[in-house]
Length: 235
Image 1 (cartoon, rainbow, N blue to C red):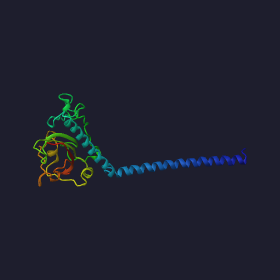
Image 2: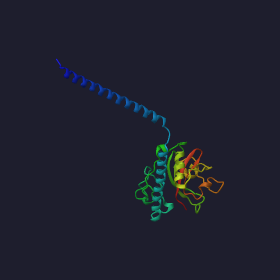
Image 3: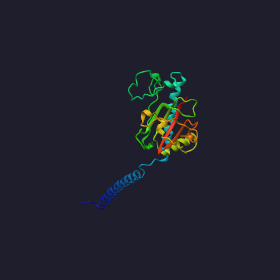
Image 4: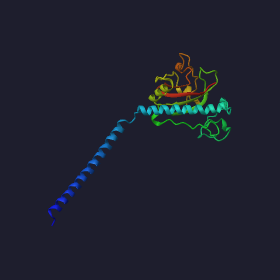
């Protein structure tokens, strides 16, 4: 038979055990509530792009354009290649490891440029002709350059509108996005990669893009499509 002191001790142990159980139940309920709220928050924010992410993506796209310019500059300034010798064969294309490798922009023995990839959240796709992505080539003339010869142009095609405006703010001081009167793909992407035909990018008002005149890097729009172009080499 327990003494009175022993009974009091046992009662206190039981009370502490019960209290611990209540604490554990409260923790479990709080965790479940937090998980539910986080799921609701994630759902409510789906499909939106925060300002912080847009800023980050804008910086990433500008940075890749700078890397591409550096690779082209190195190839031209070291006299390894002439602008008309530049070869834009991609690592996934046939013949990447054949021919004169020093002229190949993406080859380690040439420019060594890694193919770019646009973050999924930074893309707003309107068409699949061509698909969103980075496009680089020598295929068209920009009116304000020194001659009628073809320039080397890089473009991030079908990017997000907010990202586009932030790119312009970072490089030109304004979020304004100039509108082109002819499709971006026909002026800034090699016509071997899409269903259209290249048209010279005229910039004298009221031509295709007056706001593009003498601007070597800019994000533009046309028909709900946004593209960030950079002229890597002109002639």
